[in-house]
Each structure stands twice: as structure tokens, then as C-alpha cells.
Length: 455
Ligand code: GUN
Ligand code: FE
Image (cartoon, rainbow, N blue to C red; front, top):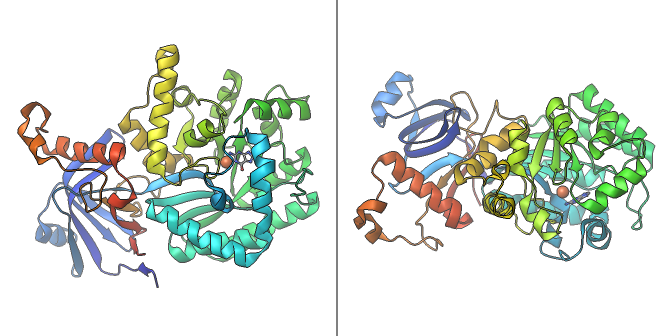
């Protein structure tokens, strides 16, 4: 069994950093977890005092090293599990060509359950190693292998939203279902995943995008979402060629967003990936409906889709999280997405100097990767930070561990103007180092709902 269960309470003592209502909170103290939930968090480090005040009789103490810190787990709001074998391939083509030449031929293979099981084992392990404690996955068109993906995530202890991709419009690769089969299988998929009674994995309705589903099917998927109180995910306004094709296919709609709105797919539990080229009226509509955006900077750059004005989306009240969008994105890591998000917003800012597009700061990007992602997936009552009552999804980070890409220049401490004055500043320095220069090597422990993930 790869997942260690925590039956006794666990008391973590050391540096803690998370994003709370007031902003980035970094302090030295303690965090107590019982049955997967955070029951106390604060600045006291006296273990006996903590145990006494919480009436704990049985507990395990984990003391972090002075240069380590604990942070919330990373949330990947958008990735395609079946596309992982294509990582790094074919990224010199624009979206629609890339889908036909690389993506659909690979995804078609997932009618083979053994193939699917092998790939999905690797995918879940890879994302877990990167510190992705929550993943919002697209599966493939296939019912059985999408259930396998849900089962692998559950088995491995990863929190996940898993979607069976819906497509019922013919394409060159013959990768689609008949409409009736599509609706039946989506409903079946919801039931099968719910039957798993998992406390970590939930099904999500997943029309691929407007170009792969006919209007009546999108409407029926919207009805299923209401019937089963299920979340929805799709793609929107990623690439100019795609947007033009959508407008051609739905001439009665003025915008891409209107297509989804007419189908009843836009609601406060809908996550739309990309949103690179939204018109102002679309941003307003999505904000009004409470839709979230999965910002996928790596993929938007690699497929030359465009530079997403993420600052503008946030300013207009949209909930935003980060997505790797493998295999349009070339990295499986949300830590990488944090950096790409900062880069893209800096490039936009450099290009037009308009304050509307001011750069996303490293603390904001950290927020997007944790609490922002949790909000985007409507999971913020459970995860995203270390509020008491939430479930304990966390990473212990060791910036200066062996084989780290971050070197420890102890001599820096002798430069007074660069030495952190307070403990809070010291912890923020450690987090900054990890964000800008770290890698998965720096993640020494991973917890999901209090259970340590072992490899
Ligand atoms: N739009 C429709 N399908 C896809 C996909 O698989 N990846 C990306 N990036 N965009 C899409
Ligand atoms: Fe995608």
C-alpha cells in the first residue's frame, strides 16, 4: 500500500506559509491534523501546550528543519491525462492541426484498457511527484478508461476531478461517438465514479469544446450537470482559428461564450480553460455566470495561441487557477505554470505598458496555484490553505536539499541589506527561492487529506 494513513493526530512544528484572506501569511509555529483535517494552526511551538489545549492523548510530532517550510498542495486546474505520452511532441503546429495530427490519434488508443492503465499510473505518479495534490483531468472519449483514471487517482490518494471527454461531431480521425451514446456514457460515467464513494475523486462533465459537440448534445450535458449537481469543464477562446471556426459553425451566436451560454453550460461550477482572446462582453458574461478560468500559459505559448490577459480576467471578477494543459503545455508541473504565468503577464506588460496588464507578482502566482485554484474548482471549502476545518493537502519544501537546483550561499547572511530582518521575511525568502528556482526535488513530503503519499 503506497499511502500511509494517519490515525493519531499529527503535530507539525516549523515554518508555515499559505495564502489567507489577508494575503500571504508566513510564520513559524504549529499545525495540527486529525483524521485528515486541520484542527489547529498558530504561532505556538510548545507541543505539550498544544496537545493539552486540544485534549490530544495520542499524537506524532514532525519537526521541520529551520530552512524547510510547509505549504498547501498545488492545484492543476486543467490537464489531459491521455496526452502525457505526447509531452513535448508536435508543438510547432497551431491548435486545430495539432489536435488532428497528434492528439486525436493518441487519445484513440484509450479504448485499450491495459494501455490506459499503464499510462494513467505514470501520469498520476508524475503529477503527485510535482506536488499536484489536486488535479482536474480530461480523460478520453472512452468510458472504461476514464473510469480507470478515476480509480487510479483514488487508489493513489490524489484529489481529482475526472472527466470523460464528450465529442459527437465527426472529425478526420474518426474520434467521436454517436450523440445518443455520448449522453448515455456520460451519465453512466457519473454514476460509476460516484459509486466509488471516494472522498477525493469526483466526476466532471467534459464537452471537449464547441467544435466537437453539437448544440443539442451540449444542452443535454448541461441538463446532466443540473440533474447530478456535477461540475463542467471545457475549453474557450484559445486560438484565433478555433474562434473563427466556432463563429462559422454557430452563426446565430455573436460570441464563443454565447454558444456555451445558450447550451446552459455556463454556471458557477464551470471551469473553462484558456480564455486567451475573450471579448469584453464575454468576460462580463462569464463573470456574471460565476465561471472559473484555468489559465494555461505554457500551452498558450507553445501552440502560439496567444498571451492570456490574466490580470484583466482577475480584475473583472473571474475566478482563476493555473493549468499545465499537458500535452499542449510542455511541463507537467504547476511550479512551472507559476513561472510561465508570471512571464506571460510580464511580456504583456512590457508590450503595452498598460497598467491593466500589470505583471502577476510571485505572491499572486502562488495564490493562483493554491487557494485560487481551489476556488476555481469550487473546492475552497475543503482545500487551498490551512484554515482550521479544511482538509490537510500540503507539501513540505526543503529548498536546500541534496541535488537541489538552489544553492545555499550562507555568505548571503553577511550582507546586511539582503538578510531578512524578521522570521516572516526569512520564510518568504525560502518560498521565493522555491518558486523562482526550485523543482520537484525540493518537495520532501506530500500529504493529501492527511495521508502521506509515498513513492
Ligand atoms: N481544445 C480542444 N481540445 C483541446 C486539447 O486537447 N488541448 C487544448 N490545448 N485545447 C483543446
Ligand atoms: Fe486543454
